[in-house]
Length: 501
Length: 112
Image (cartoon, rainbow over all chains, first blue to last red; front, side):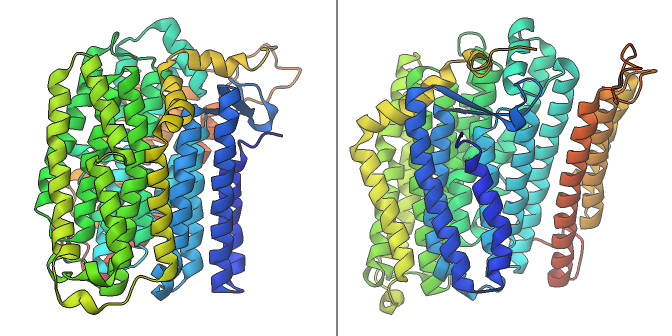
């Protein structure tokens, strides 16, 4: 029996069992969700070991062979995404016990939380375009509800704004699927890839690619389309902000873009230099614009929201460089930013839980009273800035190496130069909240479960940083190779079957 | 071909409504228009002139059949559209409770 469908069926089933358990006991719901998300983490680790042996594991839904039925295609890049999703979901779930204690209807929170997990897992492993749309909408609709979970005026407003932008993206994706189906008469990603390989890239396929890039740029919050993110991510409860900023936008925006550009349309820097330069341009614009706007922010979580937009730019640059080092750096950055930004949003949750405000000016003095939170923040921030031996350093290093190898020395210099912005806006939080002495010094420590969740992420970050060579050999490197395989993706999906019809 | 262009035109009308209208409910209607246009496009892609419904029996095997896949996709897309529209309207109503207005130019507490 294949374990591949378990990644999204387990959270999906849990999501609908939770309402029944919610009638019995509040803490039972949390226990079940935590156990399930930990089980997903173990399964994800097992999935990584599976991809070491076979480069592509294909699961047929209902045993229909590929072009007819829906397939799940699980390769090293999917394995990495599933692993990162499960880490962030687990820590967020652990963190949320005390954080959401003051909300009513807590089981609804966990139901939506599991649905969003199922949606993201599904996107990461599916091999079918329409299936991808369905999972994308499952994840997106749950995220709209989670952003509005507090039902305060600001949260509802942020949620509506997010929903308008997100749905324009989602429906453009659906329109692109319709047009692509009209031309290729198939929805299977591998089969579409074969058709494109047969016909070559003509203007019709470029138009489809443009629509897809537009849709995914909205989901990934790249700069011209980023306006919803700094409202929506801070409005959500902190564990959800951590999930949304940490991994949600990367699965819905970055993973899908990378998969479609590299494996389905089979583009490389050699055959489509303009398109790859466009990706680099979008990345640079995001880093610079959002980084500068982040400097002006006075709200803890809003600053982190802008920081997310800015960091996504680095990932896009990595994919835009398009050689092995660039792509490996981008994949590494997905991991590094998920851990780092997930951790930073969790610290914001701990601060808001104890201090009750997010205004940077009013939060002085927390460094003494909440030392675990302060040190977690410092580790997360240093990783994002790129200080060795933390994981963020290696991610940036590979992107810079990739830029130099591709002959884009100017890009390497600009990318390093712009990380000063990261340093500047994160120092603003450090100075205002944790370094400065102030009246918040008498607060209690963050609750025990919150500290455990933050320390767990710090440990994971240190381990991934120190063991980066192992990580590179077994997880990140194979993931980059999986993307750079290009059209071979289709052969691998079909190759695992004898086509007998 | 013309009919496909009309679908895209309907899509753009919906987009126009979303971008220019200031009433939350009208924005939701804009989304409904977009959803209709995409579903219509799907149904038209599967259409074959003079073809039969895709129920394959031994008698009709020589006939052309309508492509059934877009019909299945439209069913799924309609359900998803129902979900998004319901969530959107629910949040619009909650916004009305908080702000006492549907006018987006007056709903702007978030900034920066």
